[in-house]
Length: 212
Figure 1: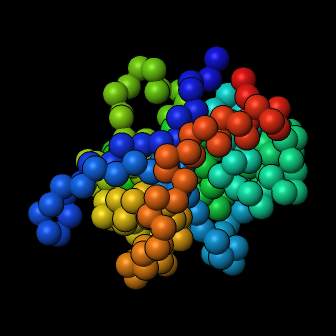
Figure 2: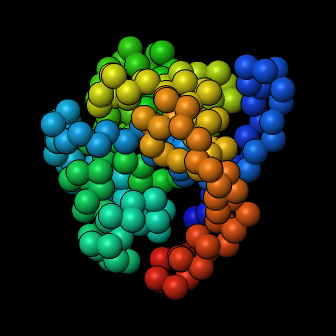
Figure 3: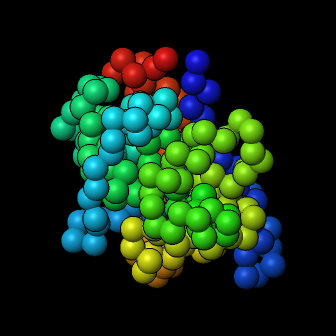
């Protein structure tokens, strides 16, 4: 059974004023900061049948639909269609197939893996899936990377650089728009859906047949 999809994260950060803030926000919002939105910068590859089988184990259709409303509008709760999009398009754009794994955070956190795999996106997925139960590599999301003080660079587009503060700012303001984050554009309603988002997500999964 897949782990409970609790998308509320506890963010404890010390900001420039040296004041510690306690913020509840959706880690899903922050994790998509690394998505490359300019398709001209994306090198779309091919996923072998063997790799597809590996990725299928990790892929969470409910999460993928929820975090990508454009795809839900197009594919609904069709898990096969969502997975097909992930392996043909999404994985190459830096879209996440599971809330617990961000390939850019993983690559940025571990120099030995970066040295071995370079920008080979699939290699990181293979390593994570095959070793996650035997190796201790806890930095697997942008949120965790920010807690460890790690700056994340996109494997797809090196111009996308996400600092720990970018992640924190994204979380407390509920935005995945990296440009807004970089320019310090605050969303006026900071509450956003922070208090109700987990329940909304649960209802979304149940209503659309994506709950497991």
